[in-house]
Length: 266
Image (tube, rainbow, N blue to C red; front, side, top):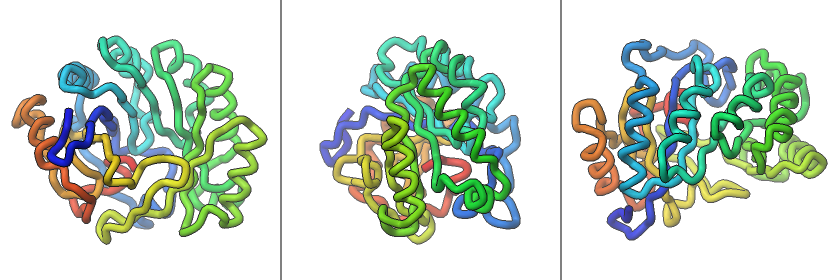
């Protein structure tokens, strides 16, 4: 698929839940968030159907996000269902890693190809502070389990304030070098203010090369993370929603007042 600006759109990011088992300070406000009712969340069958319709249109890469995707019950089964769709060439997941240790092998067997793990510091105390009580040991165990299961290359997503040479970022970089991991440094974004930059070590945030559409947990196809535009697959049908998002994809991201990171992913 080509959009109006001749960008090849072959990547669909699917947010499977707005729930998360951590409460990272840059993602969740102190007062918490209002969660979507379970009846409004897409079923596995609906998600698989979106993928099945998307692939003939040109989608080749699928990434599951959240919230935290591994808190979605039986996510391994969803991975298996998506992997069974002919034409999916790359199936990945972005996770905070807490539940990865007990799921990595099953995910790999189900057809998952790769994993990105969010890790902003390697200091246990600071990690607990950032995540409001998270246990970094479980993340390290999850990363090791992912490597053992063959979910390589394991990429580490490290959120930074401004620069990749901040102390925590440098420590994460060293940890990655010592353990055969690929670091990516992501400046803190603000959807409402339209603040984003190109990912250091990746292509995210480079609007000229953007190749992705997004599916929210409630069935909205979004052409851009930094846009309020969205098209409801349940009301419009999957094909029309995808084609409308493709035609409406902006040249550059602006602002998003409709979503938060906990319900659309990064």
